[in-house]
Amino acid sequence: MLQAVGGRGAGPTYPTMSGAGPTYRTMSSTPLAKYHYRRRLPHLQRADADLFVTFCTARFSLPNAARDLVLEHCLREGGVARAASANNPPPRIHLHAAVVMPDHVHLLLQSLRNGDAWPFPLVDILQCLKSATAHQINKLLHHEGPVWEEESFDHVLRSDESLREKAEHIRQNPVRRGLVQRPEDYHWLWVNPTLEF
Image 1 (cartoon, rainbow, N blue to C red):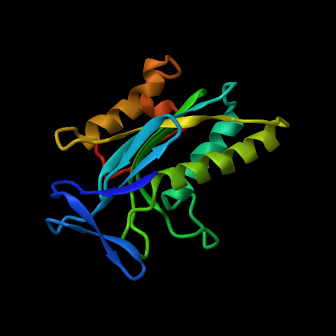
Image 2: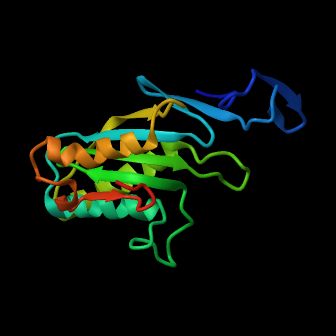
């Protein structure tokens, strides 16, 4: 189900009919957002809002080479220089931070806008990321079947939540799990250099 709703600070939206189908207007000039329901969990995506996303492995821990693949794909999706190349499409997200743990992935991101000025749908971004990495991981490990759980967990950062605090949560995840002593020592962690720690 796809339904348009008001963006951050926007008034209610009302569908109107035009020759090409429904369009949406809002009571303010704030851009509209999209609201997705997929599977069992609701997924709210607001225009220009930061998102904290988690998705988990379905049946096994990721070995180092598989974590390399996942982190590289996350960086490529975000257009980060070390993973970007001329063959890649333009980025669909602004990536703030990413960590690939043995059994889950955390991303802190903001969806960029497409040519129609709508945010790229998070559900499409995650489907692409999970599908591509699952194919590569199965090939690498000579496995078949699902690598990722179907659902992901996403959270729109509220105005009182700090982007820096969420990035710090991501940084400390390997330390809390006892994998490293310091976040900087974890190979599958990337934090945007503009977020100072």
